[in-house]
Structure formats: structure tokens, C-alpha cells
Image 1 (spheres, rainbow, N blue to C red):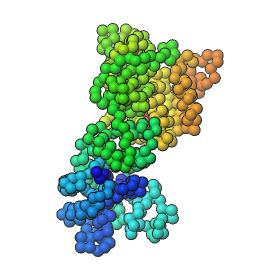
Image 2 (cartoon, protein in one colour):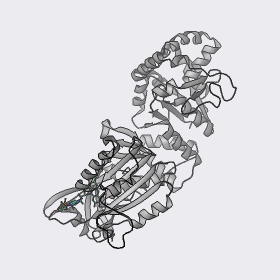
Image 3 (cartoon, rainbow, N blue to C red):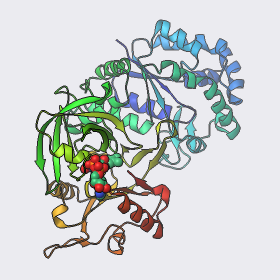
Image 4 (cartoon, rainbow, N blue to C red):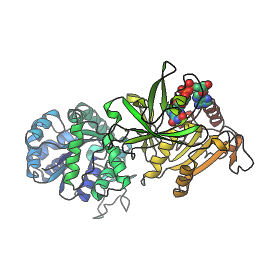
Length: 499
Ligand SMILES: Cc1cc2nc3c(=O)[nH]c(=O)nc-3n(C[C@H](O)[C@H](O)[C@H](O)COP(=O)(O)OP(=O)(O)OC[C@H]3O[C@@H](n4cnc5c(N)ncnc54)[C@H](O)[C@@H]3O)c2cc1C
């Protein structure tokens, strides 16, 4: 079956660039660009070209009654190739026409900041090769890499024409993505998309690839979307496994499998997922709500598992024991193998997307932020969500973020997970720095001394900047004190994330 992948996205989002990369790297794919077809007609001076030209100059799309037949015929000509479609279908009427004869396999909506991209775009008109002064500059300024001929701005790249095309996009093409969105549309920015396609093409099934493929599937929540994507990957010779996620089917009742004390009051607990091939299905930074009846009262508390989505059939949590008649942590410490707890999720308003990027906030009001430096300050078991994020960054070879973990405890005997942390620091010494600090040092303590808001610790933190995020998790008094101290040394509130 021929694969037809429709790229949509507002003007200047990089559709052309990503489409050309796909065609270069994947055998059997042709690129169909509606704009190029129309421009070809214009430069040939065809009757259709003459009429189309006046609309393009005004920053408008060529009306459907003029263009539909021409474009459909061109697509029909390429019916025996896998196709990357750019700019067609662009309206619901065109979707109907295309679906009747050459249905689209997958619709991908690209989502990137575009205003700046467009104003920096240059084109070699005869070949259609595009350049961007920031992302993809020509080797010689102003000249095409292949022919050395001069580059120009496209006639429809003037500010006014761009504004008009944005408006037209909102009214028309954005509805196409919505029409395909039931099950077969995914939102990605072009760099991410190409990264996934590249992995797919390489076809290596190392742990990293599985993990990344899994991350991709998390974004394809609907079964139909998953199978379309699977068909597409199969067409280019790569069939990644579908990894079922436990939490996607609602609240779970999980039984305790084993427990391993990590120090005098912290224990690592392993719970079994309902199916042995399942993963828990949390993104780095997210947590679960665990509930049980303790001392006759229903208690719900949040916990961030320390195992990630590489763990098949189980999930690990590290829990510190507190005393109290209704303390859930005490109850969990007293559980025997086979006893059950209720789990629900995913919860959380901070998600690490990888390569320095975070989604911050709840559902529709989410803010995307990216940083090149991350400092994680953890107090005791507050390390759990931060560890997820650090591990996910370190396991991703395409993630170049610089990381610093400051792990604060009261005394040396309160420190836990030391072996795992030391191993990470040793393996990734090029970009991961680890600092232990205690407020009550014993005789043999050689690392940092001081609470995380003390001058001794603060001086170890990289200077404030919009590229530097400080993540905090721990007991409330610690978090409050550190937030105040960070403000005092110039860190802006927007660059401090509290879990
Ligand atoms: C997003 C999130 C993720 C979390 N992840 C983890 C995790 O992975 N592992 C983990 O162990 N905990 C984690 N916690 C904390 C956890 O949710 C509970 O608050 C903790 O286990 C105490 O609950 P409890 O029912 O046992 O005690 P409670 O009945 O709530 O309290 C019992 C006693 O302990 C004291 N106490 C409770 N918490 C603290 C504290 N942090 N510092 C000092 N005294 C305290 C109380 O003041 C009280 O005196 C997380 C919390 C959040 C919000």
C-alpha cells in the first residue's frame, strides 16, 4: 500500500524543508508540493499559471475551482510512489476529493515559531531550493549552493502577504488537520519529527530507540493513529513494537512484588503491572496518586516512580517512612508481598519533553520552555521526580543539556540511591555534575556542608539566565527557603520550577 503523508502547518513552519529531508533519506518517497506545481505553471506561462499568479502576489491561495483539478491530476500521476504531500489537500473539499481516490495515510501538523523563519527565508527560484539565514544558511551569502546563482525572497514572503496567508491558514488549512485529527494526526515540530523518522530509517532496536519510539507512541493516543503510523513505518522498513501503557486504561490496583531498604527509613518498592509487557506510561516529571485506607481513613498521596518506561511489567517507587496514625508511607512500609494499592494518573503540571524542553502548566494553558542548563535541587525523597527527568535526559544521546544535581539530606545516613547516582555521574561526566550536601555532617563527610539555601550551596549553582532552569523538590519549608534564596541571587521566578 502506498503511503501518503500530509504535512500541514501554518505558513513558514518548515514543511518544505522537512519534506525534502524525508525524500532525501527514504527510498521510494516523492515530494508533492502544491506551491511548486503552481509556481511551475506560472514560470511556464500556462493559462492556469497566469490566473494563479495574481492570487499568489496578493498572499492568497489560488481559488479551489481553479486549482483542484490541476493538483489532483498531478497527485494522480504520482500514485505509484510513496508521497509527502505539502499544501494539498488544504481545504475540506480537497480532503474529500483526495480521500475518494488517494487517501492520506497520516496527517502531521508541524508546530514551530514561524514569523522569524519566514522573514529570514531565501529561495533559489529556478530550483525551488530554500535557505534560512538561521537554520540553513547558504554557503556563500546570497548565493545558491549548487549553481551559485542569486537567491531571492519569495514574492509572497512580504510582511503583508505573510499576514494574509496566516489568516487564510486559520480559516482553511487548520481545519484540515482537525478533520484528520480523529486518530491519525500528530502534532510535532519539524526537528522532532525528522529525528523520529531518522531513527525509524536507521532501524536499530537499541534500548534508546525503543524508548524514543515509545515516547512517540505516547503522542498517538488513538488506536487508529497508531496503526496508520505503524503502516507508514512498515513501508519504510521499520516496525517498532507497540508498547501498551498501564495507566491509559484508568485507575489500577497493583500488588506489591518486593521491597528493598535503601537506608534506615527509605525503601524501594516494586509493584507489578497488570500485564507483563506493559509500562506504567508516565512522562518524565509526572507522578501518580496512590490511595489506601489507613487507620479507617482513605488517604491519597502523590508519588513519583523512579523506574521509567523501560520497565516492563513493573513500576518502582522509593518511599520515605513517616510516622502518623494515617500516614500512607508507614502503611506502605508495613505491606506484605501480594497486598494491593490503588494507583491513578498521570498527574503533574511539569513534563520534560527531552532535549532541554519542558511543558509547564495544565492542559490547554501549557507553556513550552527550553533550557540548556538545568540545576535540580532535591531534599530527601524529593529526588524522585528530578531523577526521572535527569535520567531521561542522560539516556537520550541527542540531549545535550548540562545538568547539575544537588542532593540535600540531614545526615550522611539519610542519603540513598547513592550507587545509582554515582554511576550516572561517572558515565556522563561530560554533562552531569553531582553534589551531595548534608546539614549535619559526621566526621568522615568530605562533600558539601550546608542546607540547600545556604551560601555554601548557592555558590555552586550556575549563574541565573533564561537558559538556566532550577528545579526544586522537597519538604515545603526547604522549597520556600530555596526559592527565596534563589531570588536573592538573581534567579527569575519563571526559571524556577517547583514540583
Ligand atoms: C508530586 C509529589 C511527588 C512525591 N513523590 C514522593 C516519592 O516519590 N517518595 C516519597 O517518599 N514521597 C513523595 N512525595 C511525598 C508524599 O506524597 C507524602 O507526602 C509522604 O509520603 C508523606 O505522606 P504520609 O501519608 O506518609 O504522611 P502524612 O500523614 O502526610 O504525615 C505524617 C507526618 O510526617 C510529616 N511529614 C510528611 N511529609 C513530610 C516531609 N516531606 N518532610 C517532613 N515531614 C513530613 C507530617 O508533618 C506528619 O507529621 C511526593 C509528593 C508530591 C507532591
